[in-house]
Image (tube, rainbow, N blue to C red; front, side):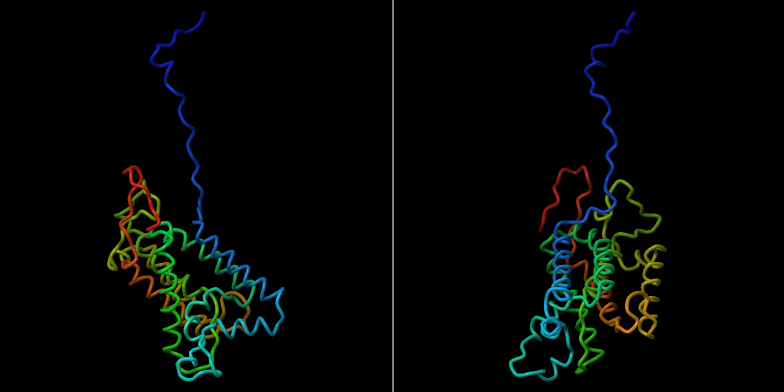
Length: 255
């Protein structure tokens, strides 16, 4: 004896298996940047001569003294160095930690504002971080390389939407689609404030000569970190666009 199944029920498809979303879906643009930074480091550390590697750091690294007097005749690197320094790194630890932090905080920001706006954001934050460093070390021959200032800007930008107060939890939206928060709303979020305080404490320790990770003998441009974070936190609304919650039928574009 067999059970009879109503026709309408027999036509129903089986329930779909729940989809497992990846924890960190890194945008392709960030992957390209990470590959670029890793490639430049490998070339300097293992493929090029030490003299050529030092020339690249000098030519494309950021040095405040360039804005007071030319370091040599025909030195025009003051034009591109406020951006190019952000793609160079001085050690494996420096590169690895920056890539990890970039993946964590760059992913929600790039997913939210798209590739083209993210490129402009990277350029502006690199310049802003370098400008703060130059303002504090005006005229000094100090070399700055690394993406830490830009990554700090991504951190500051993420704080404007990724850590909503408990009273504003948007469980059905991906993080990058959370509404933009005002400064007061960010300060009302325990998670955001705790993160900012821990980040600030780490930079204070670096400023007084207690490195958190990496080579203890390598100077860390904490001034650029602070400049990048402030830029990302306060200037992000200029780059933001209204995210579209899932299910409303509009595709996220690369505008």
